[in-house]
Length: 341
Image 1 (tube, one colour):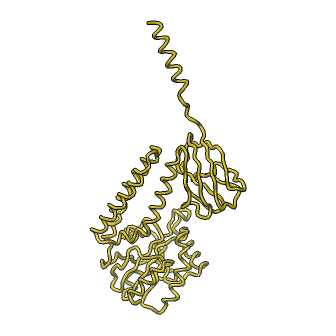
Image 2 (image 1 turned 180 degrees about the horizontal axis):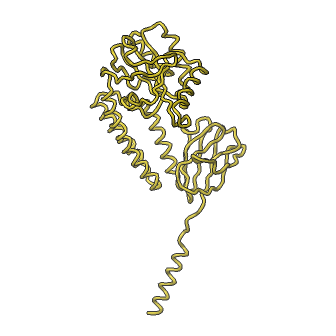
């Protein structure tokens, strides 16, 4: 019996020694065509974690220590792409820096994760403007959302060796996609075309006095909900000013409603108003410039949770588009033309 126990103990020791220990690093190598840079930068959302030298032939190889497995960014020059990194992986990539994201192919241990991410991104880009889906009739909308869910799930299940963390997060994301479309569609039905628009009342006019939505009755009203701290809002200002000049003598009013508030102005509503006035003066902004102050009712009625937001209302005060195209979108002028503005 003692000999049997000794033999079993020996076998267990040999078995333990023969098991491969998990590595605390990974290997990344590759070949990049048309590469003009000498460095491949690896970064997460917060910081650069490593810079790898690329030789004149576009080849590179190095090891990395990854604290947390997940999606990272690789970049050479101004070209960027996504990659999934984790200790223990041994990934080789090939691609063309002139079209990095679409040309990348990964091979080696752990490569399925990165190939999947590229396929997922390409699918998302192929959808186009989600608003076009939200504008469909209900039966077609449901059919389209079911189709999208099926296509996303098919991409997920076509890769057999995905990291469990990535697989579970994408599976949840696919389910959230359906929830997003269904919830947004329901909200849009509440604000669909032809319904009388919610009103704003007694908003401060930068030129003096106050304005309400009823102040513009008899005209089309293109509303820009924005704020001085909002980068995407500021990007639209030059396009909006061009539209205002082009449609100056038309039956349409361009109304900008600032949502600047105290929390972003040192806790003072007076400071928020001053900042709004100063910004308009500095930018020489035209059109009707209003400030909502402490009244959130119009934003809440339209369920505005991100800005800029553009709304088009007809001369009778009814909604034409609760999510109208941005001033930079050529589709906006096409919409104006269809309305004989």
